[in-house]
Length: 116
Image (cartoon, one colour):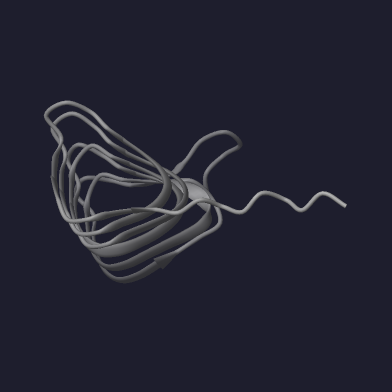
């Protein structure tokens, strides 16, 4: 379990095959195959990570390699040197120079609250 203000970590020597779910921020620097679901949290895919999974999280930051679709209610950031193959559905997206991306982007606007 991660302490207050820190993310849980999957180290670079760890390999996971299956389903990863949680309610806290997570940094993956190892290998994950399957699905990652962190609906209320932030997922960071570190520079050493090799992830082959569909991802669902509040925010997603990618520095390593991801093959799979991304669904984020908040922001997706593709950082310098990353490699992403898959579709992105998010409220906001930022792509740095020299980030690799192959897929389509669907920006979804969250409806404004109704004023009564």
